Length: 401
Image (cartoon, rainbow, N blue to C red; front, side, top):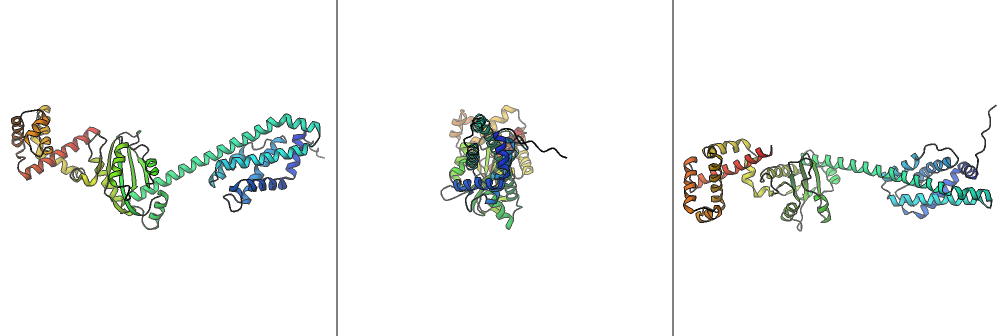
């Protein structure tokens, strides 16, 4: 014959057992009060009546079980409630308010059950601190579960956004997939867009700090991600937010080189925009914070896009000049660059280089002897100009390695 279980000792334990025995009615009472007081739990709200009563039952069982002397699952119930509410998008303050309402109903019921019995009231007052400490622990567990789920949702959202942006920029999104990616990124499918690529040369440094938030504050839709040491984004242009305004904004925030592709009219064309932004970024001055549009640097872009041609052009046109000792080579290269900058005006070149006009002419004649090309001849000047740009880009690329 089995030994009967002894009744729990103390008023609080006996009251908790009694409440567990009529748990269904008490769950409905607590849930009804929450629905009446907290809007997110009312009719047609985010949390259904069935879900509210299910989680209310789990939490009340845990509370009364603990007060009856059976700790059971500890804070697993409120922790799980926090996670589920976060999944439904219920605001945390509303959940905590519902928890406080439930705690208040429990306390009122315990006071009613204690009635006028002095011993029961004395125990209830003595244990009040423990009861509210339990409520606080449960609230903290609920908050922790909520925050963990929000963090996981943010991670999932970030992964989904990265995947969607990769699909759009890689030309792997078409038809329904393109519309799905656009929704994930918060971008229209049709409009006016540009692709931006920024590089720092340092994988630990963000190339355009805070650009997404800054654009969002202006009401400009954009999508960004970081790849190694590059920051890549698609930005929506409007009549008020033009490419020129974007360029100025990027110039204020850039910590490295930035390229902007030409505008295009639909996300399906983003793959071309990315290639243009990559070339424009590569065509900027190495080590600078230059922001360069693809359409403003077509010569440099052409050379960057054909590195073999750039190497051949540099060697063929400037080979003898580049073979000089460092000082002589740099002096002649600076003089030729100044010639292009000042449209061949010898006086302006002399002033810029702090030398005599005859010195400028002497250097230019020497360049002509070494290269076999005179700057006064249009065809020869074009070759020298292209070779200079190719040399600059190749030297910058070598310096960054």
